[in-house]
Image (cartoon, rainbow, N blue to C red; front, top):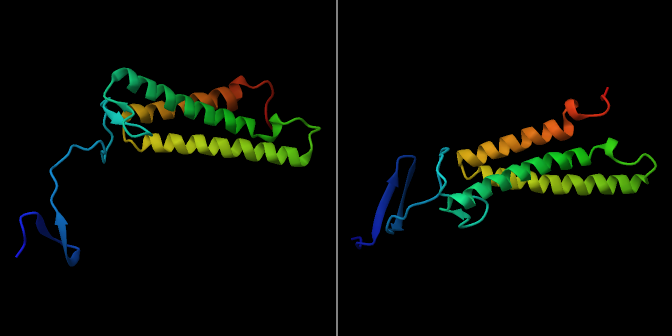
Length: 145
């Protein structure tokens, strides 16, 4: 016989029986779909919380992370390195820039996994503006063949 704290769960695709302890329902900040509220959690536990100003700061932070990721992608291009530089120095510089860019990009991905629509749009617009400014042909001095 089961006690009042245990419940038997039988799932349709799983024929084994498991016992789980019941816990009181707590609201969760994890959403399986996009939502548009400002009460969310981005990158760190408890941040930005339920304050609208901190939410706006989180959106700006994600925007600039994406923007800087595009700048670092431009910095790691071979054309941005001096022509007379040592080959090993070029490889080390490009590797360092790529590593930092990858870190920023993964932080943007983690922020988007919060499933907040505003964070998603901030990331998209940050990448778009960064691409237009740093890698788009409209702002370049020379055309790439």
